[in-house]
Image 1 (cartoon, rainbow, N blue to C red):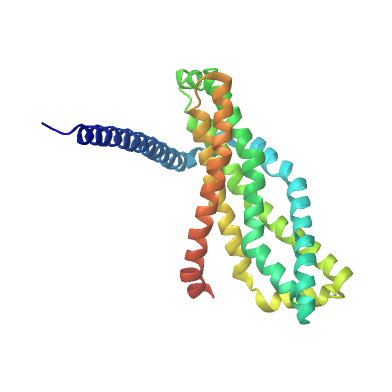
Image 2: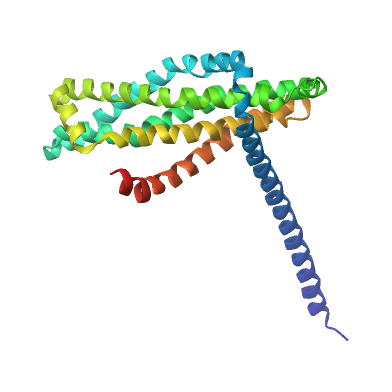
Length: 283
């Protein structure tokens, strides 16, 4: 006869194993769902690349998207970049002044903006302002069955809806990154001159000593990759929206979250690639 205490222990172990099995099943289900979403997004990007030959047929939509994504984002991006450059100069300058190295402000702010802050700020502004709008617009079309109507009329939704949006970001974001770099450096130079007596000429000379031509182009290259990531995720989440207005809200929120995560992951990978490969090739 099995002791009662041992029977209770055995029952508790069964319950624990059952709970662990259910937790593992839920975790596996979530991982499989996310893997399917990732695969679907990659296939959407491949399909979009295959539609590049039809760019001439979507020029009106492309120009409208460039106007919305590019020109509509200049003011807010310039404001954010300029203030960031000023704040960096202020905070860094006080510390460098203690060491007598305030003349190095140009090198520090220049390297930070050209290599990181310019592309990252551009990506954050675009994903928050344009990526979310793309997901909401396409999501509304999906729940209203407008995307299905395009298919009924033999119009490829990827060519008509996705291609101009991704191309608009690929064209706009490198230009916006260049603007962010210039405005950020200008803001840092103004604060350096006003607060630390570092003239604009000294600021520029310090930046040139550390930076070289490829640094700017590396940032532009990163912003082009970020554009593909943001555009593809936004379009995928929008086209696969369900459950009406609530689904549109979820698609918009998930677009912003996923874009932030994957932009930062891509930035880390690109930094490793640039440091270990491109700098050895181009200097």
